[in-house]
Image (cartoon, rainbow, N blue to C red; front, side, top):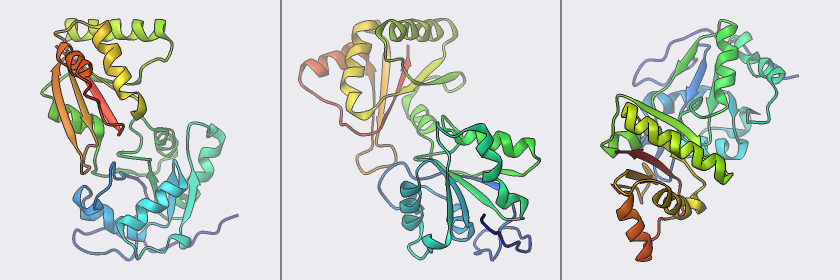
Amino acid sequence: MAKYTIEDGGTLCEGAAPQSVEPALYLMPSTMADGRPSDVLPQRNIDLCRHIRHYVVENVRTARRFLKRVDPAIDINALTFVTLNEHTRPDELPAMLAPLEAGEAVAVVSEAGCPAIADPGADLVAAASRRGFKVVPLVGPSSIILSLMASGFNGQSFAFVGYLPVESDQRNSRLREMLRRIERERQTQIFIETPYRNNRLVAELAAALPGHMLLCVASDLTGPTEKVVTQPLSEWAKALKRGEQLAKVPSIFLLFS
């Protein structure tokens, strides 16, 4: 069983490297693309990464690489990592909060972007809240918000629906429902797809939905090849016929009219 050392409680001051961190569950955004973490993460996050010793992560290897990019001086071997993913059972969550019981901070880190948003970290946040632990959301990149900002679509009413169903009948049903939401409620619809299926998804959307429907594709957000393109589905269909291809990089898709 892991042993935890209780440190004196402290608060983090901007511009200062804390010697201790207030015990809380910190929701630590990670980078979404290659590049310097300091370009997309506030200094407060970087300081916290240097001093938090307990991490709950989706993938240990990815998390270790992220922390080394934040600061190569971080002693990765001195940290503890616990995996939280879609296979984690509810009865495993309390043990992940053990450092908080001992007065130490815990950080939740997702694979990319903000934890607990379309992410299993939400389950740990709920467990921490039920037990009365402080939860601290930190500023960082979110593909959902960044793509919506750049799309020109309705930012007052929007819905993130995750991945579309794989089965064609269910997929078409979901698309019809999204179309109704756009037409009746003026609600922007946001969704994602596995990068290697980017072109196939756009072709399916162009075939199933009205040509005047606007599609925004935001790719490699915050990365060196970042690209955001908004145009009618009819124009996307023409581009595909001309042989133009979307890069097989992480992308997020938005529909509006």
